[in-house]
Every structure is written in C-alpha cells, then in structure tokens.
Image (cartoon, rainbow, N blue to C red; front, side, top):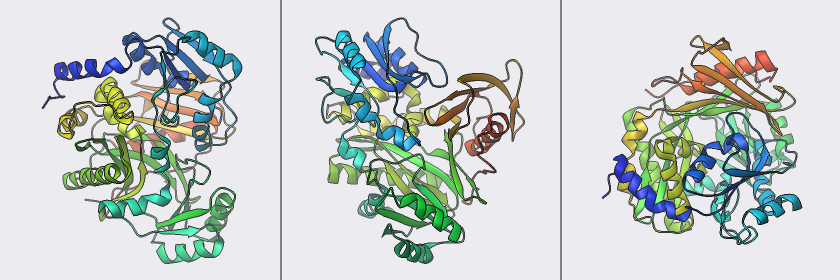
Length: 467
C-alpha cells in the first residue's frame, strides 16, 4: 500500500497519473480568470499549451499572459449563481464563432481536451475534444434534493423527517404544519429546470408571510418542493471518494451558512476546516460517507469525489443534500495536494484505473487535519458594485473587519460579477484552529454592507448545540 502521506510516494503516483494531461493542448473554461489561475499554472507545469475561455476577470490573481492564450466570451445575463451554473455546459458547447475559431487555431489536430468544471458534462466531446475535467450528466442529476432522502434510506443513514409535496398551497401548508419544529420549516425546490445550488432554491418558513413569499418564488420554478423541519446546529459537510475497491472518507468541513432570524434569510459565506466537531460525531460523519459511497457505487456505478451536506444538531449529524462532484468542500480538503486530487478525480470520472485503494487515500487525512484552511466569502446578487475590482487591507478585532493600512494579515479582494459582486478575505489571519469560519464571515458581510451597500443585513452564525 503506497503511503500517500509521504511526499515522495505521492509525487511518484502523481507523475504516473499526469500522463492523462501531460503535453496535451488544454482548453480551460468557461471561467473567470481569477478562478483558474492556479489551474493554468499547474497545466503549464505539465507541459500543456493552454487556451483560456474567459467570461470575465473575477476577484484575485489572474493567470500570467506568458505561456497561455486567451479568448473572451460574453457570459449571458443571470439572476443567480444557480442560473450561471446552469449555463456552463451550453456556453462551452455553443461558443460564438470567434471563440470557436480560436479553439480550432489553438488545437487544429484536436489532440487536446477541455478542462472545464463539474457543470460541463463529459458524456459527449466538445467539437471532437473530450471533456477531461467535468462529470457525466447522470451524476449531476443525482443532486436533485427530491432524491436525497430516499438515498439516505437506501444507504442506512439517519435523517430528519421530510415530505416531498406538490408545488401547490394546500399540500405545502399541510406538510409544513406537520413537520415544522420550534424554528419552523425549510423548503427546497426540485431540479425541474436543472441544477440548483448556493441556497438559491431554499427558503426558511415560519409564518404566513414566509409561506406566501416562498410560494411566489417556487410557483414558476418547480413542480415539487421538499419540506423539512428547520435543523438547528452547525451547518457542515463530509466528503469522500468512491473507488472501485470502496469509499475513502475525509474530515468534516464547516459551511458558513448565516441567517437573519427576522427576515428568514440564509446567506452562504464560505467553507473552512478550522472548526472540529466532537470526535464521536466526526467518526459518525465519516461512516455516513462510506455508506453513501457504497450505495452510489452499487446503484449508480458512481466513481469519484462527492460530499454530503447537513447539520450537526443536538442529536448528531443529519444530512440534507448530496453533491456528486469535486465540490467546494472536497476541493478544500484536497488542498493538501491539489494536483494529485485533480488527476485522481479525472481518472475516476473517466473510468480509468488509478491503482489506488480507499486506505491509500485515507492516509492523507492526517495531513488534512494538520493543514487547516478556510475562506470567508460574500456572494451578493443585486445592484451593489465595487466599481470593477478592489484589493484593500483589513483590520480584525475578533468580531468585525474594518479598512486598515499596510500589511495586516487580512486582505479584502472583491470584484463585480454578472449577478452582483463577489468578495473574499484572502489571506485571513483570523482563521486559526478553533475559530468558527461563520463568525469571521459574519464580520465580512457587515463590512460589505457598510462599505458597499450590499444589504446582507443582520445575519448571524448558527449556534453550536452539540456538546
């Protein structure tokens, strides 16, 4: 068994897996430039000529112009992150003539491939070039929240009570009245029109006003809605990788989902590993991943990374949704060696042999525990703007950020997007072991309201209720 925690051993395995990409022309995108800077650097290191299909600049470092080519396309207007992600596959496959010509000039012999994202499908090539980093449409379809609870049951995983109701007032009212807890209920919409994520199709319902607003949102968008009691506790996730020989389970990740109890609004604010659940809960979460992975493999022929989102409640971890991809949380724990995990994911999704076992991958969990990471982010959908892009030093007093001077250990990086704006604190010296990411993110959102008028409001972290 190779000890992947040994850098030399891991480097040898990585070199073997890198043959999939090495030297091949690679089309990267569609993506904002700041989001693919590290990927472009890595592909160049493998000797790959790179063409970036860019939809904008983004916030943060962009790829160096030397060693790659660039073609820009106009991203269609979108009202939410969900709408943006739904367009990814179509954008890649329906490039404007100028962009398509640029791709053909870049790779006239069609020896290359596409390094895309999990929202570009691998089932069919794009103009004769295989999608080497994406996922099958069948994997994407498994993220429909209407399927999740049957999957937990099939995998033998404890879950909260739920009802999948027709999207009509009487059925949703009856389900909510039956299931609501002390903090009300949560409604989640189906995937009738395609993937939905980032909490865009999730609503917190406590009273008649909330119910009417949620009905108005879901009426034109969904046929069915899942109703669950509001689960109090720390939002978190657990990730793993399905291999032919079983499922490797990694460490928990905190999800900074903040909420405003007055307006019943949820705000996503990033992910981190500086928080630890109790040891028994950690192992229970890892058992969830192994059970779910076994079911995905047996019932759906699944291979590759996935994650289970949920809440660590007073009664333990309860799952809420499945992410059948190299999600943000999986990517975060994979930062111990991004290149290795990128190659691993590509091989598994494409059905290629890696020669690795679950035990091999789990030898990296100790490194994941040592390498704590996190990123406080603010994703705003609306008219607020930072005026292009900004980078500003920040001060942190343990609760709030303020604009600082010089080197402070905290840097705000923000940029306008097609749906509003995106901001992050990177680097962020506040994120040390034991610090909840949600607390830091709440400080970032208050800063964005003061400085840029984003209107996140009086959002707060979920409390820890499990001791």
